[in-house]
Image (cartoon, rainbow, N blue to C red; front, side):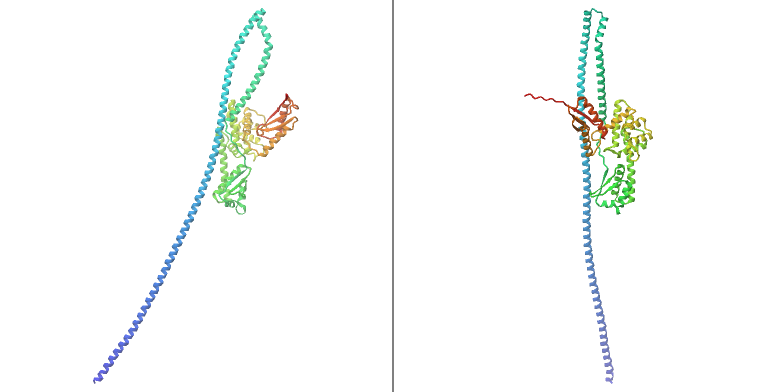
Length: 543
């Protein structure tokens, strides 16, 4: 019974123990799986951590490399900016140095000009001092001569009275009879003395007139400042670099063709570095082209539309300058109330030259000379100045209108109602019509002085040598001429003749014949003096 009870208990205990063991084994297996899962999770977490650390390190390295690259780029940019700044500083320094050099050259030219004027003034002062000393000496001589003359007159009166008394005593005549006798005896002598007095008076008047005329001309020349000018048919425009030449030419040359068509000026682009040349005989068109080209170079945008715009602006600017030049000339000479169209035409002479002489400057100089001489002679100074200023007005438009500048000038002044004296002075200043007033004569004299003074007009060396050679050839072509020399820059010819072949009377005729041939065959400004020299030498040797 007891065994029967123990068996179920043992079975139960064994079952409990077996269940516990199985449960323990199951739980152990679960725990091991959990531990394994935890271990796997830990391994995954550790691997992810390592991966993140590696990625972080890689990112840190990339950021470090990027920072280094940025620093390198910043350093390179800094160096480039420094180099660019240095280049700009160098360019600016070069530009400033060029401007300083230009200003130094300008100051040097002005200094030289002032020195020349100072030397001229010193020379004039010395001449005036010499003239004053000469006048003082002449005044003293005149006073002494007057004293001597008074004494001689007193002595003559005494001699006449003594002669009268002797005549009374010798002839036994009364006063009236003696007077008739004396007058009869001295009648022939009085006639001869009167003729001599008339002849001497005429010569003295002629000499004084020549001297006075020279004095008037000298005073007129000394009171006007004159410049030396040179004629040119080209203008040069500076370029900032050689690349600008290609931009000026344009694609297939379209820019240069457009520029030449709008301005009428030839644009020359050659191998000369950093310059282009504008060639044309019309100085107004050349000035418009130069200003337009300078504007285009400064702007940098060069194409046909831009060229047309710049040429229009330059043309308007030059037209304004032309009118201002005419007004400035009137203000300088004190001339009022002139037709605005005539003032504009007058201003065009600023861009007109004749034999290298600027025509506007020449006209102002002629006006000053004519006015000064008119004032000295007591004539209408203002009318003389007006005639001198307008005498070459026809040259302003002689390229556009047919006819000589004299005919054009006469037509213009009549059109704008200038005085008849001015019109006649213009018409007669080259001898085409008779001169109807003294003012016309003064304009001719002033025109000759302004054209013939040294440095007024230029001519090529070839023409200069040809003119001198022709002068000497003309003089040598006459029979009896031994030698001929052109001197004073071709303004005088010295002719040496054989004394045995040409007499003293004949040299006057020879000089006149040479003068006529020179006037007929040569064109020249001013006057040419013909001097014929005849010398007779007799040599004897004593032994």
